[in-house]
Structure formats: C-alpha cells, structure tokens
Length: 247
Length: 291
Image 1 (spheres, chains in turn blue, green):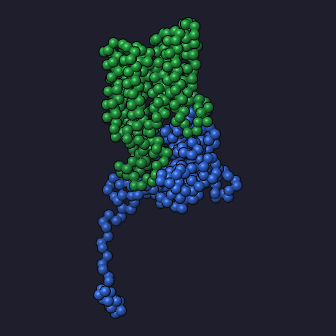
Image 2 (image 1 turned 90 degrees about the vertical axis):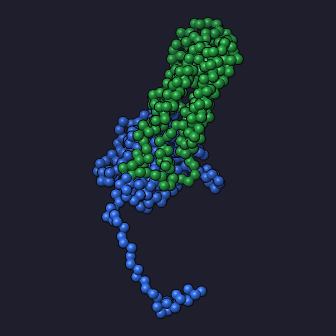
Image 3 (image 1 turned 45 degrees about the vertical axis):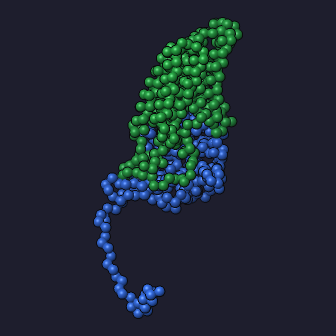
C-alpha cells in the first residue's frame, strides 16, 4: 500500500550547503553516471546529438541571484535540487499502482519500477520537481539516495555514500541520519540553521539546506584608489617605448 | 499544467457519461426495449470511452493492471474502482429494461445514481487533492466537476428545462471557480523566497536555469499559451455555455435542436476543461521564474 509509514527508524538524507556550493554540476554528472549504470532503468537521453536534446536527471543545479533587503551587494547562490525524501511525501500517497513507497527502515522514497504505469501523478504532487518520467522507458525516475551504494559491501567504505556526495569537490553535500540528533549532519543543521524548502506545502522534507552565511560588512566604503607608482621609463625600456610609439 | 488531450477528453466525456447514468438511475428517462438500449449504449460508450482515453496518458500501459490496487490512499485508484462498480451496478437494470421490458431491477437505480456521482467526485479529487497546484486545491473544484456532469447528463437524457437551469448553474459555478482560482497562487503562501529558502536573505531572481533545453518538468507543468489567451477563452466558453441554455429554454423541444444544444455544450465543456489544465500554475514553476 502506498500509505506512508507512521515512523521511520532512520531519516537518511542530504544536507546541502548553499554557502559552499560552487555550482560545478559535478553532482549532476556523478548522479547521472551512477544511476544510468546501476539500479533500475537507465536515465535516458533523447535526441542527444540532435537539435532538441533533452534527458532525465535526478539532480539539477539552479543559480539564483539574491538582492539583500538591507541594500548590500547581491549574491549568487548555486542551488542543487533533488528529491528531499519528505516525511509526509505527497508523491507516495497519490500513486494508484503501489509503485511509490517510503521505506520504514531508513525513510528513503523509492519507485518500484515493475509496478509504475507512468501516469505522472506523483510528479504533479511533488512541489520540488524532483521526479522525472523517463521518456524512453516510460517509468518515473527519482533520487534513490544511491540505495545501491550506501549499503553496498562490495564498495570500499568511503564510497558507501550517494554519488553526488562522494564526488562534490567543494564539500557542499553531506549525507547522514537526520533522525539522530548526535549525527554529524544533525549537528551541522543545528549549527548553521538548516531550512526546509517550501515548508508551507506541509511535506516535512528530510533533506536540509544550509543558508549562505552573511557577507562581510566591514568595507562599507570602497577603498581609495592606489597611487600611481610607475614613472617615466628610462634606459633601454625608455628607448623601446619611444621606438614602439613611432611605429 | 500541460493540457493533454487524453486527460481533457477523459474528464469531459466520462463526466457526461456518469451524469447520464445518474439521471437513468433516478428514472429520467425510464425506457424499455430499443429506446433503453439507445440511452444505456450512450451512457456506457461515454463513460468507458472516457476511461479508455485516460489510458492513452500512461507512459507504461502494461502496468495499468495495478491501477486499482491502492484505493485506500490514492484518489486515482478510487476513481477506477468506483467507475467499474458503477458500470457493473447498472448492468442488471439495463439488461432487465432492454431485453425483458421489466422494471424489476429498478431498485438498483438510486444506488447507481449515487455511485455515479461519487465516481465524478473522485475524478475531481485527483486534481483537487494536489496542494502543488493551488488553483485546483479548492473545495469548489469537485462542485464544478459534479455540476457540469449533472447538467450534461440532463441534456443527454433530454430534459430540456432541467438541463437549461442546470447549465446556468454550471456557468455560475464556472465563473466562481475562475474568480477564486485567480487569487489562489498568491494565497498559497509559496513564492520564490520559500521555494529556495532564500527569501530571508532578500529578493530572489533566477540567474541561470539548471538546464538549457526542455525537460519533463517543463513539458508537464508549464503552459504559457493558455494563460496568454485565458480571458478570451473564458468568453468563448461562456458564449458556448449560454447557447444551449437559450435553445433549451426558449425554443420548442425537437431532436435536431437538442443535438445542436448537446454539441455546443460539449464544446463549452472541452474549452472549460482545456482552461482548467492550461491555466493551472504548479508551484515548481517558482524555481524557473525569471521575474
């Protein structure tokens, strides 16, 4: 049944640091790579070398400009967006076939591809645009939190985390159990004021976003221009300068 | 939202079919023999045709067999289950009336009528339940679907005066839905600030989208043409809604005029349903908003 569990033993999820993310799209590529070669139907590309290339991605990075209300300089914020593995996931309960479900043991929201009929209602129910219907397979694809990596004992221990987290060169992505207040991710969220996206939608997202840190306010007045230190060139350089001027 | 023809036809045509079933259940009209065959054929053709049309919307049709399994949680599942129960419930009554000219099974009628209405209600709930589409997430949405269904059913069951009055009611509900819907996105409390969580820092503007070409989300959740012409289409839908009312209430009842009224009404329902999808804003569009 696509009823949501009343309680999950763990709340595995991501913490994304909007202060640190450099917007390199490395997580997007790592995600596409892993999830095309491993669990489930591959993430297809349609018309990849043609005039209208498009494809399925489980993670996408937006860029926003924020103009602070206090009049400070505007900031560019790189904004990775993927499934937030919501506690009250609206995508799960709308599913008519029982393909969408939330796991009791770790809270991961998954799609059973053998039951999905590709109606797309779950994507309509998601406020975050986290689900994409694969245009080749006709099956709904979404972030699995790399369920085939995090428990995979064939991988070295340092690789047992989602591909996006493993690849992030800036250390802007963190993975852990957000139900455990003593976990590194929970401490990070508490320390940095982690936030929910669209809390008014009532989805109770597990993934948390760390807001950009406030910018320095020391240099309110711009520094004075530097004095000119260059003087008239002499000797060989002086001659070269004059010779080149004449050309 | 993308106004997919399969879903527009599904909601419009099956709504008409179940509307007709409701009136048949209440005994309007109560035919026997070939005449009964005619009206039941129409009711079954419209409702089953509508349901089949919805299957064209599916990207992976082989798994449609599971579609009715989640009736405890999913409105889409409930809609399927109720539709099948309603269609089966009317079968004994139809067989008795058509082949035996008998009203022995007419006791099913009121139950079937109630089931038909609940089916239309559950169709509307597939859309009404979505908090992500504020324009649909209103108590008036099921009222809109049910009013259209009952009015169209009255028209199909050839009750000129009742249909005329119900069509006026449907038009009133339609305008109320449009007026209330226009304010819904603002009322939902979702904006670019809450979507990105950056509203606390300041004014948010999209600098660069996450992708340069289209994707499933853009194809499915965005439709700008509908919004551009929405006022014109509302007027067209209104005119199309008024014509059958004038025919039904002011002119003498005749078969050709009734068919004309029906065709114009179907045009009005399709326009309205097209707008229902095309005008609906999904909150994911806030992530793509360039303003």
